[in-house]
Image (cartoon, rainbow, N blue to C red; front, side, top):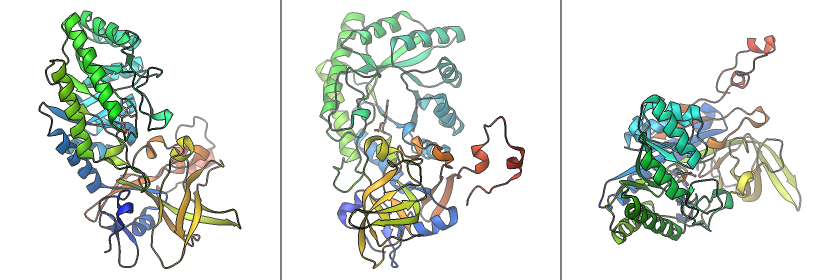
Amino acid sequence: MREFDTELVRVLPDTARKGADGQLWVGGRPLAELADEFGTPLYVYDVATIRAACAAFRRGLAQYSGESSLIYAAKAYASVALFQLLAQEGLGVDCVSDGELFMAHCAGVPAERLVFHGNNKLESELEFALRIGVGRFVIDNLDELELLAAIATREGKTASVWLRLNPGVEPHDTHAYRRTGQLDSKFGLPIETGDAERAVRSCQSLSALQLLGYHIHIGSQIFDLRPYREAIERTFAFAARMRDRYGIVPREFSPGGGLGVPYIPDDPVLHLTEAAAMLAEWVQAAAHAWDLPLPRLFLEPGRSLVARAGLALYRVGAVKRIPGVRTYVAVDGGMADNIRPALYGAHYVALPGKFTERPAERVTVVGKYCESGDVLVREAWLPAPQRGDLVVVLVAGAYCLAMASNYNLARRPAVVAVEDGRVMVWQRRETLNDLIAREMVVAPKMTDIEFSPCP
Ligand code: PLP
């Protein structure tokens, strides 16, 4: 087995190796073998990389003097098997819909470890969350506060809540679509407008709500951590005012998730242990500065736990050379399984499934869907690509499948996980029958056709 050069290692799963014959191996298995067995597009998760990321966060949090917990943001990628793996690692799950809550509940994640987020939780979702005993409701606005209180009162329950504060802080090093901490945002109770204070007062008067603490989440894919510090300081200054005015002291606090990960070798790298330790230090300093007790600290990462662990495997179907212009390499997936390049210009690295002696060519890897914007990797270097080659897109573990669609009635890919040479099928590929499962009027002939789940 051979190692990769240091720049590439930043965007590969921890166990990636190059076999003697040039094949790319992950988790003790050659990727080409997985592609042959399960078909493409195929998403592969390296379990060791996920476990290592959890351990890195734990080491950082160990430097916090108070209690702490790790919560996985399910929106990055949701599956029963992943939730079970993370629950074994001691994590809870942050959910934003009854769908995510249901899956986490089915996976056996203890309800106490579930955190329910969202800027417009439906009445039915709040009822469901109360019924399964969600540990924390993160109240996003004043309407929701009243609604939750009314439902909890009706059900004879007490809901444990955090208030999601909008601290008025904007991280500038991420795409505008991924910023959430600025005043002009659909998320959170602004401190600046007085909504946050109104929410504190309401919690005090509503016996169905138990205010445990505050939450902030300023955005996602952030490398420059200074805005977190600013947001933490503003939150604790607010907490101190609420203590002085109403005697309310937060027992818990979460600065959310959002830590950035490199997608291409030139991207910066955040050391997860150091980043977690830094957040912990800023929370300690802010609590100390305002003479507040250390709250139990919750970190809520999504991307940084699973992105680099995931790979997308595609098969080349067509190569179109336009001399002097560009070479298009069309693969059997694309924007239906990974919308990120089309949505916010995300960059990726594509590698060949097998490194050969063929000279590398600059190409554009495109998908098979009916949009010119269906580009996966605008500039990839692949060894003289040809039909049948395997193409591997790196850092595909977060916000790819999570945002996957059935555009063009694509079937969503299968997902396998690898660990120490073992392969676990996490999710089967969707079938043609899945695509018509919701149809209420179905051509009778079509229902007679049986399709196997894998190609
Ligand atoms: N917490 C909240 C409230 C979020 O909205 C998000 C994502 O946007 C996260 C955590 C996870 O962010 P990330 O995947 O960037 O770590």
